[in-house]
Image (cartoon, rainbow, N blue to C red; front, side, top):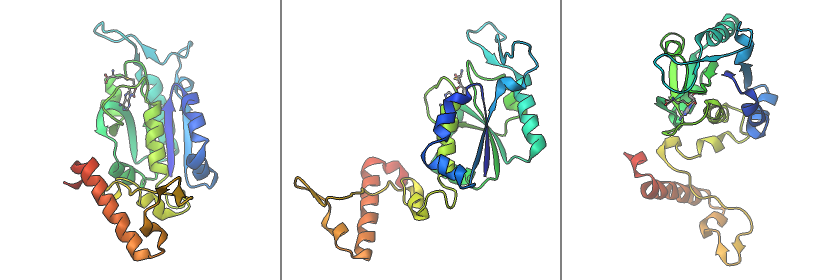
Length: 224
Ligand code: SAH
């Protein structure tokens, strides 16, 4: 899978992409994640990518031309399944959406900045608008990083034990059961007996019960 991220602040995401599971996915050739610096796609002699908004409101708005140039450049290289814009008024990002996007081949994620982007880009170039939550960030870079991480960790082979991604919270609409590691007794804080029993069926049943009970208590909305 390939994800192209368009941004005015590539340095904000670069470090993030070169750590942990995202780095491993790229090293193994399972994901290709490319950053594109928007200022490289403007013909403006000062490389400006923003301008004053019509209507006299405060703040700056990202211009159409560099964004269209960048998207057209990418589209001339390959076909894209979706051209995503990160925006607080978009569809709410979720685990089912991460599952769905992880099945795509090529995605573009456009990060907004300043007051946002010229609305005509959203009308004519963007195919999907996604928010990572009901709060406003300074730019779409963190949102792109969050989505890329959630999507890429689902690709087969990225996490060594594939089952491990499937047993995480929100898969099957359940929160994950509690997990423990050694020692089995830390100053009297004990690991549940059943997990030490070696009895696979009982352990599975315990995990399912815990997942269900925790979901009922903490996120009853998921069970509806
Ligand atoms: N004026 C806009 C917010 C602009 S914030 C509004 O009120 O809706 C600048 C940029 O940050 C946005 O264009 C978007 O790309 C990104 N951003 C901010 N909050 C976000 C969120 N919750 N989810 C995804 N992207 C977000």
